[in-house]
Length: 323
Ligand code: 5GP
Ligand code: MN
Image (cartoon, rainbow, N blue to C red; front, side, top):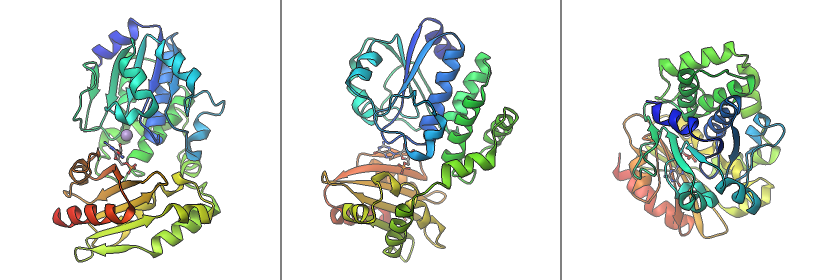
């Protein structure tokens, strides 16, 4: 399974590793661990992301070695490498500012991902939808190719698995995922400390915004569809940051009877960032897909062009009909 990736590594000297817009714990964790692995093999490697690293993950990169968000000079450097690894995503569009330059650049491209794909962007791909996270796949890669596991790489992979499994509660939490995290603890990961760094560093502004957003929750389909809306003005008034809404949607799924939970976050650019969550067989990947987005069966997202009201009207209708 890793032969193709091994060939890319063996035949290249300089690497860039990138992932999707609005990077999360798994994209950052898997990219940083792969970068560490490549450097340990005597290669030159950098991680580059279109958007900034959220506060919750900055501790993984204390010396700010990641290029995130990328600037013009970073793009020049990235397009000059021998090979680019694209992790935790397999669509050019979701690479943001990096999509075009990488797609049209000379570098060999390889994808390592666990999302169901519609667009196979390169033949050098390892896509395993059963994997809990891309971090799990990077662990398998390091384990198979035989590299040392630094504490930094172990922290990064643990963070990726922790966040993508919703702290080991999503259906994707497999025996293998637990087995890997056990081994990461052997490499020095402190689970209480990682949890605290990732989840318990919220600002007062985020907490106030969350209170307002949750108090305005709405329901349809006999309480089986729940949704939250966040207008840009709410974010501005509380002094919160746009990325502070991350995780809010999960509160909809804590309510008894809710099968599909959605959050609509308006932007000042006339778009709405939508995140969807579901229980069991309810497929929100399909719902997001019908609006041009994607993700997994129980967690998906899409960017909608229009107002919050239009997005709510259109998406909740499809969600109710999916019950
Ligand atoms: P979240 O709601 O946490 O941002 O994303 C949940 C899942 O949906 C993630 O696996 C993510 O990759 C996917 N996702 C989120 N937004 C988009 C989007 O705009 N397009 C696609 N194709 N997938 C998305
Ligand atoms: Mn992931």
